[in-house]
Image 1 (cartoon, rainbow over the protein chains, first blue to last red):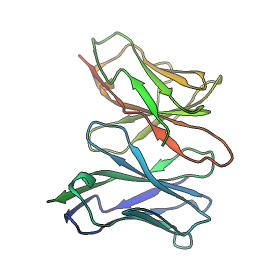
Image 2 (cartoon, rainbow over the protein chains, first blue to last red):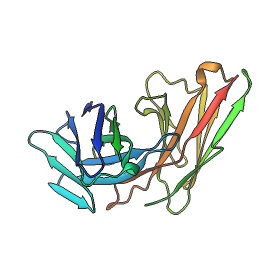
Image 3 (cartoon, each protein chain N blue to C red):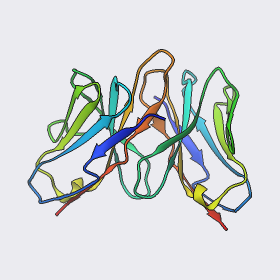
Length: 111
Length: 117
């Protein structure tokens, strides 16, 4: 089955810096890769996703890149703000299959 | 994005009693719904997957007689924790997906904090 590894487990940056979180997956047939942001005491919020037919996707300060050959994908947050502080989860799945989540990255953005 | 609601947001119950958690998709038809459990500072653990009108598929190690799931309609799924024990205390989160050809997204509810005393 699918296995997703996520690094780093914690990431501290200064406000305005960029943050990068990386994930690797094992199932070459996986074709959907979402990223979720979870604030304390809340459910995960879908912030961006990418499908296997695309190499990069951007939404304002957030971008995701996918390297199918190496089986890894990354979340890039530019111009970080304190409100970006949260736990971020990557996930991977085949179409219509269950999501397999990474272990999460705790991002702390200091003012 | 689409909206998924959960009720209640938190509940306290006595050991041995049962508690029901509702999950609703508010603006789309949830062909598939999922129930997760999350312990502090850990990732999401999938408990079961359900399709409307069908029996839920439980993950290995999850007691189906203890965690009863009913996906009654395309907008409602319920999780009933039966004969609750303190070790069932956790954060329970549902999510929903509309399995259309062009749709891949899975949306999560806000979660329900269960405390069993």
